Length: 290
Image (cartoon, rainbow, N blue to C red; front, side, top):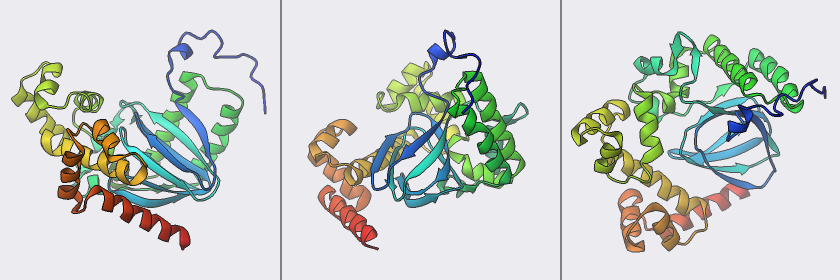
């Protein structure tokens, strides 16, 4: 390891303002089940090992060395670590771009109705491998300056743009593609605490009808349908990936009672919460036996 001549972060005004490291290597131990709630879009490059992840409509997806994937913001992610695994994690700013003339949102014209439902894993090529081999030693040396990491993130996006088709980039970055990034970020930041469209519109300082039109244009569906889908995903995660009681889950997700939770679960999954949890445990046991 080389030691930098200067401790760039010592006394740095900007480093004191950072809440999270922009780029870091994260290690996971074999056999451990890890649960994460993402607060930003996270791009992962698997450096070694393998794991099985689940979130939203993605269930038991195996990832391994050389895989590049995007974890959407505000999702409950479950990892079953099959081997000792290391990942290179990039916490992405909503305004991240491929270059000054090519934004992620410019891929909206490539999106079709099936793209949003896809989950594309990109394989690292030789250029990505060379990029990783130059970046990680710098991280190990302690070069964690905000501007250095921002430049390295831009470099990665240049490489991704250069060696992937627009359709693949659109599928990969589909959770981040929107026609109004400010509105999109506002919704993600507030929908959990402001439960109704009226409260959301009031905070956004626009009329309810104006909010509805903007929401439909950005998300492609109504606020009611979208929040129901978020509730469906969160409920599935809490029931199948945690050991919390159904009363606890009711409070966390804002159901008025366990009975209300049960009725919602039956409508969404055609099975009650207890049976949904048992079914998932049985599936996990079968998977471990194979």
